Image 1 (cartoon, rainbow, N blue to C red):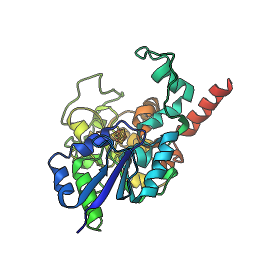
Image 2: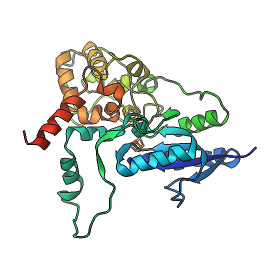
Image 3: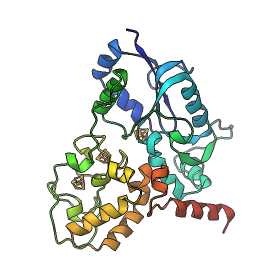
Image 4: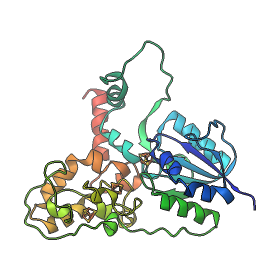
Length: 313
Ligand code: SF4
Ligand code: SF4
Ligand code: SF4
């Protein structure tokens, strides 16, 4: 039986998804050996052309003019397109950029960055778009595989399912389902951030007054690696299924209600803290249309503020 050709392209992202693919170690040849021929993978193969392929895997989000061209070239050359990682599926962490103007972003990253040396020579980098976008805002996507990056077990099962023409056996539970910390009622009255105190390693962060988004995050990382290592979950794998499916179900309100129930912290204080941390805790999915229309989305407010700055208001 002929091998399926797999072509991979990266748009704007951190390259963590490519590393995850390369990180499959001995599992990679297991899948590739008999079933898949890798025809394009920027991190491992020096192929610039868009070779025609059965499966096209795209990482990163639409952030530059180059991303638009690359996404269309992949769509034209591949039969099936997989949006691989939280970036193409929900926009990824670049969503936090909405809180700033394009000029502020460029100044901060390149022009006025103290560790960047500017030169007189012209800079040939792709033009930044005014906004960050999901992959399916530009081309049709056949399969969505969120995760930042997806755990190798999900990558292997996703690919195998696709090759065998079946639905992959991938659960839809949230991160809490894999977390060993216990949710218990406490008498905590104030919010604490993860770096401020030493937290009990057996107790849920929410019970200890520290924001954790595991209950509203889709488990694409397995075994809750961050809470297990002592760091609260910031939902990098994307939203849980109930949040995706129910328009009125919202990350903020769900987490605030749960934390208020587990502690003596007023719900309003929790919501205010979520707002303060919104650029990190909410960023991974806020670009997606699923989120920008949620009742508590800050995106419209940020876009309005940025437009006012640009107009000089
Ligand atoms: S999904 Fe995460 S790991 Fe993958 S490119 Fe985006 S930021 Fe990097
Ligand atoms: S909210 Fe966080 S710490 Fe608590 S059980 Fe869920 S993942 Fe674990
Ligand atoms: S932040 Fe949450 S969803 Fe992301 S890897 Fe850590 S535990 Fe998993």
